[in-house]
Length: 119
Length: 415
Image (spheres, each protein chain N blue to C red):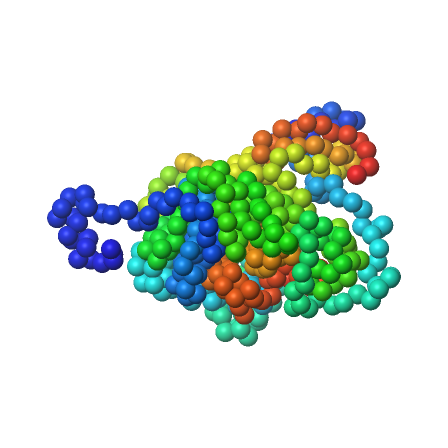
């Protein structure tokens, strides 16, 4: 059982919370696909990309989709899933019902910090 | 050396002193045609197929620990194909077909036991889900049938049956071709067969970096030195994100703990895999008499390979509630694996934006049963640069294209 140090309620068992996963960039300010250039449907086209730039900055991705679609897909689907420290969002569902950002080590489960702040 | 009964007799006559090593303990070479990261079932199966079916000559499997020390050695050994989504049903059904002859194909006794799976349906939602799967399975030619409650109790007489049950048994679902396989044997069988075809199996070798050249794979840096390669396949389950990040990639997977427990040995009392979908618990009985018990995944991401107590309590409570005679049976061992659950709970067998880099991941709690087809499909990617028909739906591109395959019939999710 993890004890989550809720800033308002003190250390509480993790069963009182809902963990919604790692803190991510909000979806709402990602450009909507099709707002600029036409969004291409997923095809089998394999396009060369620069691995250094990453999927976000590449003009074309392995699917042939546009940058906006790639950004949306990245925000919606991709995760860091780190082996080590992760910044997670926890909601104190059965307590104060406020949101926390928790820094936890995924190899030891040690919680380094828990702050009541936006993601 | 081929395994056969005369070999067994000859070796017994000699006091079992002359059994050779099952696979070569290889030293890493500076360069390979294909490097596979992860010495579990999928990685070793991929290596065997690359050598046997595609004629690749220089293949290495790199394993940071010992082969089969990851999820292939930690699962509850169940094989089945009663999934929800059509590509998964086709994939797993083909896997069942391969499992049925794999001991002969690999010349190694895998103890494939088609003892069937009996799902005990206790809620209307799960019954609707079972009916939907029944129709799709029947359309695809897979075996699946619904049973009434009386038939469930006839096949599993030890189940609780009383008027005060909170979730009475409504029905059952049965797949006869499902069953169990000895998980460790699968690792050793593929390793032995692959090694005999020249595959280098290198243990104690952790990948610490991936070298890229103009957007393509150049090689890997490891704890045992640099290794160049043309093709790199990641088959490292829960550690896939960690490895993919070395190539600048983020993937739609999260690593969770999936626990399993084993009881003290009991006289034979269970001749099938018994599943309680509504309670997220399932069990079977091994040939040693131990009950092998599993449940749903732990809720938070973790690489610790040990589960939390809440899930252990929930699974134990579910099992004891449904099978009251187990209330005083002791649990001998508990462990967990680091499973990579994809965000649509369907597998990812795919190329990536990095040329020459292929990934087999997102298997979640279904990795073991998928080994025969998963390894073959990954090998097809490495050898031909495109998917075979079994893995075509599971490309990474489906996420970006907005076509995920959301799955319900998996222990990884808590739908």
